[in-house]
Image (cartoon, rainbow, N blue to C red; front, side, top):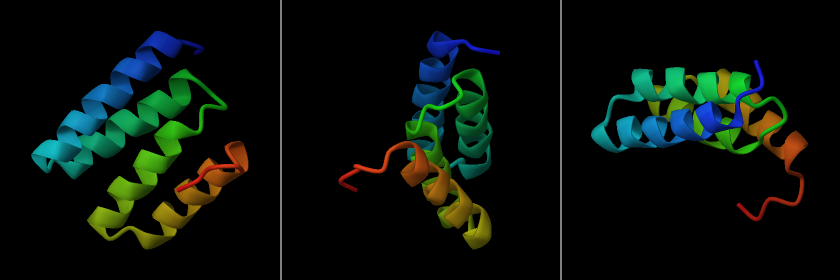
Length: 76
């Protein structure tokens, strides 16, 4: 399902939903972005953030861990 353009679009839409406060929709979009471009770290960062806001701590930890596995030199 390699589609980097779709992944970028899903990221942007997910960030829009986060800004609006629709965390569930944002989670769906960030998950779609991760599927569309495997190995891309950024969706996991935002997915972890959305999951944390929703109170899904275990899921958030997994997403943040995946983010750091893919991008170990991350400054955030």
